[in-house]
Length: 430
Length: 63
Ligand SMILES: [Zn+2]
Image 1 (tube, helix red, strand yellow):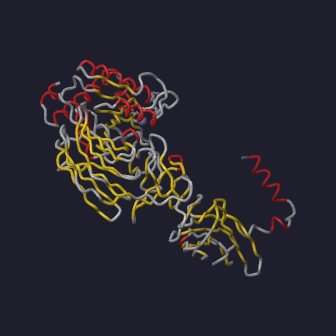
Image 2: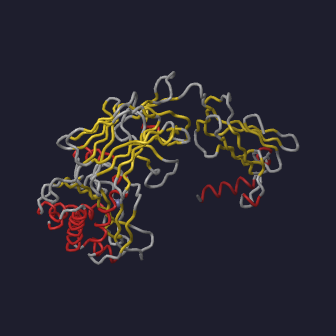
Image 3: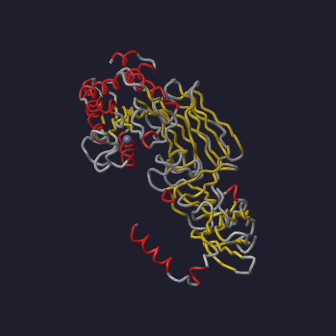
């Protein structure tokens, strides 16, 4: 180890650092690292790290499968109040090749030079002796039923995947890791409405990419999962009649119960404000003929994971999540909207435009937002941080029943504009 | 807080014992990051030790 010069340690003496690159054949069972310090006067001290280190044997690959309905991959080991940046959700029983661990996350080898991280409570280890996950792809069947368009790609095991909707032209791109093409034809059957050209590329020997062009500029969402070992992509179509009448819209009042959220100087609580605005939004939407799903309609605690699961089951056409912002700086105020995927940016933008029309100053329209309820790809969704409860003027507005009503009606108009954006004047007219 | 300061002051007034004279040679010895780790060939094991300056520190029985 090297004793660091004090210029690199804020003047501290006696800081030693060392690096060891693990070599093939090295073994180390799960155990603390032993350190020795030998002084010039030959005093020897031994100490052990608190944490344990294990060197994996590459000749015995560690395999695990995803468990639970909300397993997900992270890009790296980052942590903040939103958790690590997420690569996306995975179906259950997806086989992952585990090549390392740091803290409570395992490193996953997705493909040559491609890694991800998975929280330890998202996986279950398989007995030793298995092979690293890999599969040839079979020939696809692409077809529509009365509800969705589907792409089905047969594999010999459930491989991990990553997806995104790219715009202009609008297309769904899915990378399947460990997959190599033996797709020798793509059969397209009757009933397709949302999908246009579908094809694939082998972007590297072990990454197979589905490229699914969408016929509508606006994506209304999609889901990816497995039926047995068949990768199944379910693509949602735009609503048949572009009108709030008949649409199922989900309204999520943030926080609730013991989870109070932010609190203003005069005592206004985020959980009460979000519920009040959400209930006004619910009534306004119902007056327009929409079916409204509330993730909560009382002062109760609902875990964000449970909200996501319930939304996935009830399969809404749209979601807005309502929150109240807060800052340590009392002068900061204004409204802001948040989306995760560029495909859903038009919804967020429309909501932002209408929230600004209430007279609130703008705090921004924010993309790539790593918040749980912005994670689902199954329906367009956005989050509205209505205003800052930490700012006295915003707090006054947030607690005013009239202004709550105004904000609810702005969100309804945002949705109408969003629907108008996708090509039909019917919804925009209400 | 006050009590512990008081105790510390009393302690410092006591005759210096051998144990007290000898600050621990190693104060802390940790992996970086300080977390349980599984590593494979090619991965880096990083460590940091805080101790008496001017000494020779080793880990894993090497330099
Ligand atoms: Zn909140």
